[in-house]
Length: 131
Image (cartoon, rainbow, N blue to C red; front, side):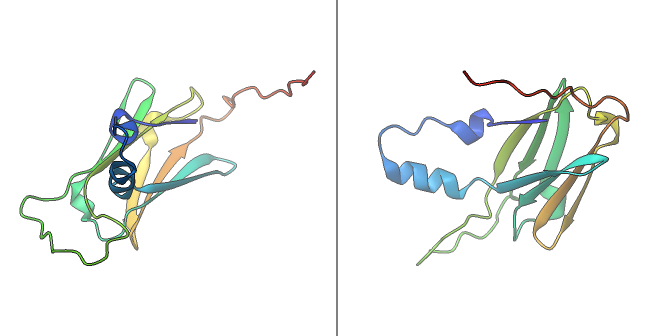
């Protein structure tokens, strides 16, 4: 499985660093780890509403997105270090992922996405010598 920034995550921000900071707050942080039977994606998204997450697979790309509901309160922030706003993240799936059996749950502010491996279809790994 390979991580691939989505167009929404990459963005074109121009030359202002302020825009980079604002946009980076709208991205949800992700950790990925591998077990013997799956890849596990942890999307850190506290304060979101479970029903407003959307996951879909098109071809070999898994997209995880969130859209806040209409009328979501937007206070006049004094300090804001993270956003509860919308985001979209995309991930390239290897042929070893059983895309039909991907499962997700939202627990304690973390969206947990489990990507089961197809037994016997592990990608071939080999070392590359550096000259």
